Image 1 (cartoon, rainbow, N blue to C red):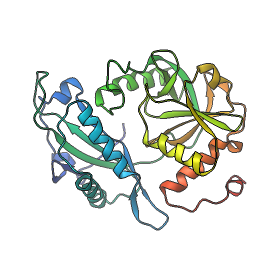
Image 2: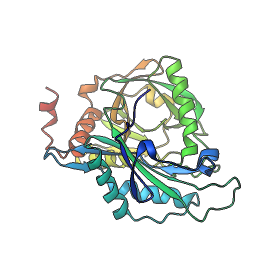
Image 3: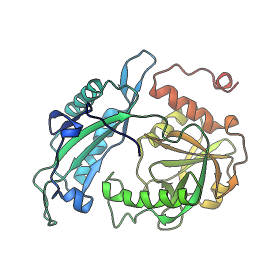
Image 4: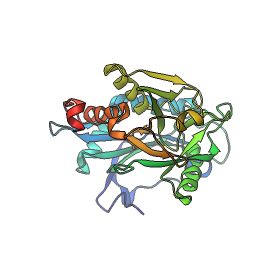
Length: 301
């Protein structure tokens, strides 16, 4: 298993910087027993100038607040407080290219009565490319995303991710790299921790909001499409459409933008390096590192 911390690792716990090895939480926490917590996945990068920059910090901490409030968890922190604490945690751990995990969790409570307070920690660890640099073999999962009438599907809540764990483990046990889950109506939804796009005849398509987590990286891809005049449409996506596509990719904070090699053992029609999707991958990496993007035709040469 990966090692996320050592005896010198520092995290931020309820306003104090403490060693990860000495941090404590209540074993009677409602979060531990019922999965009642919310979190964010954020990344920081060493930029072209050498500075450490958290990518879209405000948007992530806005979503953390929205997630907590949507499932009735008290939330008392400001974005400024949390962003300052995050940069300090990065500095104390001497990290630039890092994954950042803030978690809002509940006190001891074995009932379902609403809490009057919440707790928070922010931890960081070194992050290499989540999927590496190879194209992925993806399968349709036998698991569906939760019904939005049963959960607050737009909340990044810990309990939702049991669904992700099961889907990912199923895919890997069958020899695939990752899974694509459908919604309750059988349309393509998202991966276990990433949104998806597919490409056909130079145009991108992505599942519309409603049954998916509104990803911050997904929103960034839409911004990149607008900036580079790449047509994109949000719609209900069938599995058959993906199988007929020229290319497809996942996008997420950990995943960044990562292409697919095949879907349900059907390879895509175009060479990844010749697709609009590859242009978006390059543009995304340039954006997060604040690097001037060279012309794509040169980057692919």
